[in-house]
Image (cartoon, rainbow, N blue to C red):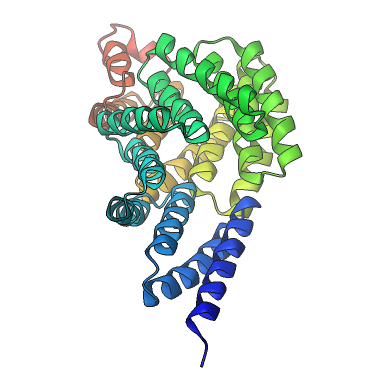
Length: 346
């Protein structure tokens, strides 16, 4: 008979194995090991073990785009964190629930979760968790068009990274600064920060981070008019996303490759990639992704003089953007009210 201590050791080993697989982007193997660990921790009544593993499973499911499942695991983690009085665990769960709510379209609740978590982390001195929350809050504020507040959040994140000499936090801040400058149309600055992040991704051997920053660097290159380089960058990001099982990233890569081909004038191929993005976004419940894909498809319809089809797609995109509180809805409403809609491109 295997002793309780041996079973706990086995569960800990499986948990560590899951973390190792996650670190190199092998999400499916990570989930397999973590589910085995969770089973043992549950059978032996180890609440701390269950709490940690539930959080890790939730985080990986977010990366894979399985948002409803992720929320289920993270909510279970939060219940145990509350039961144990584990304030750090509570903060981590709140951050992850905020990310899930962003992907599922509830931006108001996401902001509430982030702000609650950041205040808790600051009060308790959880600097790394605070930095992570600040970066996530900044990303949300950029999406809401609150750029000054977003920049302040990123600067605070970067300061913590430098104070702690954390390459991970500094890498994350470089990525976030890049996204900020991308949203502000300062493409040279954006590319500079994405390249800094990529250098740290490679130093850290972080495939997920490399995928994200490669994708973003490609977008900056496209806006700088370097379409062939952008396409190569986005194709590389797609390869990484498919290798590590990142469905959200895969959808984004398809969208960006479609935009590259649109810029190169191959509208038929662009539309095929936008359709793949829509399929994945619908499959994983990514509401913003669905709206973005419809908007991109409409841009091809307009160029091909399929005006009625374009307007239908844009009206559906507006509905979806409204659902998640995105300012993109107002932009499209203004577009549709233009007297020259049939001559404009999205």
